[in-house]
Image 1 (cartoon, rainbow, N blue to C red):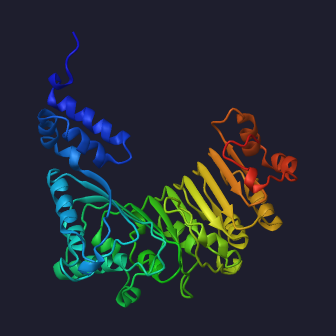
Image 2 (tube, rainbow, N blue to C red):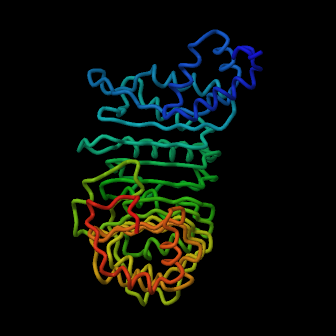
Image 3 (spheres, helix red, strand yellow):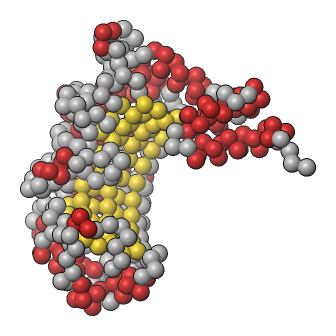
Length: 404
């Protein structure tokens, strides 16, 4: 005879709740609905701290008449939610809209204090979706609060943090000191493994976050970034990453050659692609090839000259996915891609390859019905390229399921 759901063991019922959370894009809403069903479900939820370890929410708009203060009720709600999780590792994703900012009046930077005082974060995501032209100083103030806390206490502010993701349509930090000292991420979050910081507009922000002395490259497995402001006394950024991060599994870098400013207007906060300034050093600066043994997923959005140098100087024997976008298709960059792919060391374990050069676009995947074409491409690239060198596909007609 089937049991009523409330007759299930509480551990099993809690697992059902947890599965329901993973199916919802807004896991917090799903849990709130479950808690409100009945007293029994509320008791089960409150008795299992693992259900309260994750929260995705939008920061409410500020009250401009009150001086732009953060609603205290919002921060109190965060404290109650994560307080039920006890000492378990926590995951928080905050989305900021048009009027979500803080000023030091009224309640002060109460959200800053909450984020910096909690040592249980394992995954932090900060997303700014507003297209307001005013600078986004909130990020700079948060980073400054983290730095000051570390300087006072001389201990890591986020000792358990492994993933830090920042996506923003604006990227001005608004604090001159950070431009000079940078963000000592390896001291503040010594266990960081995944770093993603995507901005739309170029300024000193990327130097603050991506400075080689501040990022624990040796332990990173996932790095996605943009924009990157290249300094005169630094080597080419991508080569620096490949050399400094030997255990990297995923790399996403976008750069801007200054020729197509429309690219910077099409910002998607969920995309790993971004625009940046990048000056390619002369080929003589890299006399030997860089071989990265662990890198498996590569997403690059580069001008042709940058890509030509990379194709000539790097080899990725473990690569599974290679996604290359360029600002505009050029014969020279296409020839460089052809030449590189003929090298058996370039992608012996390739699973998916996509090229998007505007007028010329295609995608090949090992899981498609047309696997013959994929294996023909990887095993006999010279013949494949020769047979497709006149294949021109308008960009607006290209889609992921294009059967090549």
